[in-house]
Length: 445
Ligand SMILES: Nc1ncnc2c1ncn2[C@@H]1O[C@H](COP(=O)(O)OP(=O)(O)OP(=O)(O)O)[C@@H](O)[C@H]1O
Image (cartoon, rainbow, N blue to C red):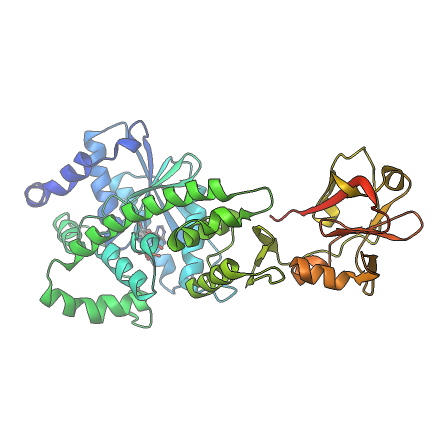
């Protein structure tokens, strides 16, 4: 053991030397221990760090997925290793349920992260190394990922409030970890699924990367460097998108004029940042481009819509709005509460009825004496300069998307006469003098 420590001493030294400043003052570290070579190396290295930093409270967690016939043996191996290193271990059994097109691998990962988030330690350390990082960059590239995806795995990130995820081995090639583990005389288990080339990562690892290595022995560090550069680019994109989003955001969505004044790539980033803030996954880049193109060239009367699994984006008047998928049916009847021109919030209608004083508007007496709101049923007509006009045509001309027409409140007088289509037109017959104009403000998300 003493002789071997001379061969690979620099690994533990380098770990200590590169201890992130952000982790100073944190002492409870838990290693995600699969029992494989990488996490065995990490646990052992952190044990060496503990010798030099006795305040370090080191523990380990093994997530027992129960997926492999060898799962119990892996857990046993972790137990024996932790006993020999004097590290407390918790073994967490999880039920892996893949659903909705998710792979078993992804479901197992999700289950692991749930266990990590539940840890009482402030820092969870995982053993991803430089080879993993290089593979991740290539896989993201092959999936057509952008800067954020190509930034691959960060060395440090927040896992949950007050909890960090740390990957201290990202700059170390796997071969060095193997040499280290062998020198320490430590044993590890091999996950048999790692040899299964059905998984894309394993196909890269076993069939493609060995070829690449022959021509470009330093490809790992080059890909890791590319990831670092992309991480910077992604951080700048995020910063700019956050600022642009702040400038474009209005109560009901994004201001079209401000959005369209931005360069095309910034527009896309704003929309993506907004969707992310809403918790909606990013749409296909092509679909987003097409929506923005249509939104830019939309005339009065056209309302481009981008339909997404969670709902839809639409351009209406001077805003881009996001509407959740399931729009409830509006109420059949709502009494107008007249408060001398104060806006009336109507959450059950998904918006607010506001009032403006105009040269031609509705008389106050009419509004104060039993007016009400009801949805469109079809066939309604409103008094116009010449005769009466179909509400359907008024909606179309105003560019109200069909989706919003269903829950657009129409304003009726106590005698059942249609007084106004708020925000679009008021009865010509009743608005002969200065009076009130109703404005309907649909609230998007
Ligand atoms: N069963 C497990 N229990 C605890 N930690 C684990 C387990 N499996 C993996 N880990 C931790 O996660 C690290 C990455 O493992 P692996 O490469 O198998 O996961 P991955 O799914 O490819 O990566 P990611 O977690 O980024 O999705 C391991 O080095 C180890 O630290």
